[in-house]
Image 1 (cartoon, rainbow, N blue to C red):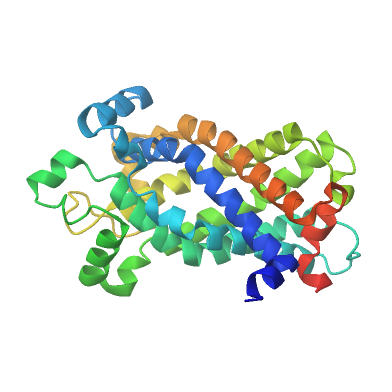
Image 2: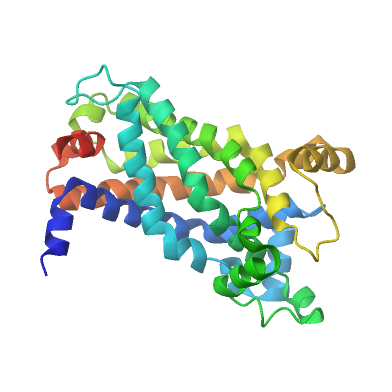
Length: 315
């Protein structure tokens, strides 16, 4: 009876719920562009507009949201754990600093790297299922009698587990860690640095404007995608392959070398424009929803940043 009031009264509970709001806002605002990015990375030709027109024309607008159930169902826990891990690790890597001050930029960057590595353990199976559904072409699936069998996240997950076991569910784990660890370091560092520059003192006192949150969050997303994008292309291609795939890669290096040899170096940046456009809006939405949720729970704008950054240490 008293669990939820006590849970929401705790700093961890506020972080958890606020992270969930932020994650849901990010998925809902950017999923169609995410599907388009995945299709571009796997495609050997075609502009973003032509691929988008093909998806909508051949498969219907609903295809742009195919696979959204898996990340949406887990986003609250995933994002809440990411923000909470970041709060803990950024302090752990900045042990010499005062608990009343925000962590140093070094602590922010290293905390982000650790958060990205840890999050990969949860993200890899979710991304695998999502990518398989996003790349499932209705015409292809019908011709192979697969469409009814792969009509949702649970269907795909069950099929992978039955054919490849637990190891198959974690296909792409190494490349996901290599992508997410540095990109999360860049992500959090850029966010904290940008919002402090746009609103001096906000890291300690809070109170930044919506424009500051959206701009800082958007730029953080753009920077993190640019720094890791070639690895994301390799990750998509590795996780997209199954026992039915015409192209089979033996690993990260093989996928990278063969992709470049067959399609040129430009393949490593295919879909970057879509990813950057999506990143700005999505990450602006994530941080804005996150900060707004915290403000609602704290009901005190001036104390948000300190409470957020030192959440685990004050309990």
